[in-house]
Length: 167
Image 1 (cartoon, helix red, strand yellow):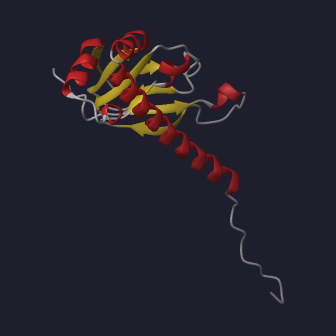
Image 2: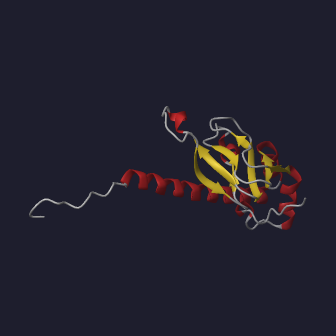
Image 3: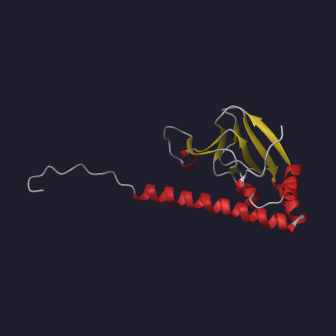
């Protein structure tokens, strides 16, 4: 089944030729709800693009030594046009979260790190545009995470109104 890459934010301003080059190194997966694509703290060398359906990105507080319920917590649900796993393209470090299919008949485009970097080396314009767009996507995600952290640090439960005489 054909899929459209131009709907993904990271392919903004790429020419049809560039999109075809990317399509040539990508594969498609169709998965059902509950399928784990990768686990938190696992290694990875692939980036994923949601072309249909949705993906839950989850963190597990147990990874930090906390014994809490519920265990895995969904921090964001990604939909058509959004990417995940892109940090593996940059540093080849461990995955910072798990990715789990949230909806039956979810379609993903998969791009391997090695193939994408080789393509970027062959076509510097494509490489520049793509890496710029990935950096913009990562910056957006970092800003969102920063806001969530600030909210958690600054949140204080409201105090009940005082019933003391003279208040």
